[in-house]
Length: 504
Image (cartoon, rainbow, N blue to C red; front, top):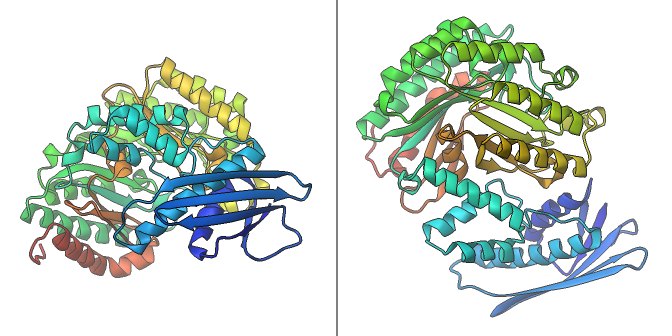
């Protein structure tokens, strides 16, 4: 679909126009002021900005059909040009989305939002003590979010504040993400730092040496500056890809390096690939008092697992779940993905029925996203996925199933190129929610990333300003540079928490 946009001369509008266009059309191509005889639609904008921002847009197609809409809103006082432009961008987005909805008949339930953390908007209102009705009205008027999604946001925010009552007071603490970039194989939809572990023992050994170094240095800084840890999350990759002995040494390092490990509210280890779970590894987790893990089926259809590059069987997932449960794992999360290649309502209903037999403490329901660097995106023709209407039906099935079985939604996030413009939702039984998932999504505190591909989010304790910092994604580069990256993080931490230079 080719769209000619006229009347918007500032190229800063382009990204927003593209993202919203992608919500409605496959292979959407945006041209600004460049006439193209092959264009499918023309959208003529008229934008004025004074005391008010006024947007008029007229849409024409080749067959003479026309739609038009307008939007007017008072301009708010600003201190910077960026703040001024953002108001213009939101006004343009509002009119653009409205006219495309009218022309296509397609309602975007998340409105103009294309970011991944919509609940942050509602948290801002909660912190400002805005009345709930007023907050909901502003979300609907400003962003065109539907009542259905606003209600979901409110349920999640309420749950989060019940689980972490001091959520808004945790900026003086940190959480830790530890990235282990190895998996048995790489899944077709994956863009995480994940390298097939077979034949890489040299890389693994070098990586673990760097990881232990980072843990000691960061832990020393936290001890020296009396900064508490709220949660620790071992992700990847698949952290249980390494050996039981390597896992044992890693958790021993955590207890030696980090302050007051016994007081950390939650430690989670991703064990997402069932083919990495062994009795020996579960004994190690038990030894170090870690009982929150993820075992991720993604689907209970064997043909699907083969198509996406997961080399375990459905039976193995179920067997490893029971093994973990019998060995004292008391908080198990499982993931399902809506819209995997070749799957529709029938297959997803089967996955839900299998989930009922296991009843994990939490169930995260993802909607497939075509991530730019994934094998699936590079070879879309090989992977047939469900239509938007069927994806929406499967999401409704998940909502009904979780409600019926007393799971409550407690976090959500969205991704670009996500099927049906939907969302990923984490559901949990009462008091089984992941605190780390809440912290990473709502961005209320600094999260220090340690390890290969680990991204840090440094959040200023007073202003809330976010500074991103990422370690190298490939083990070779990480192994060559972990000392330098650690020093950079320590410097940021000193500046962030207003500490004098120290190198523990």
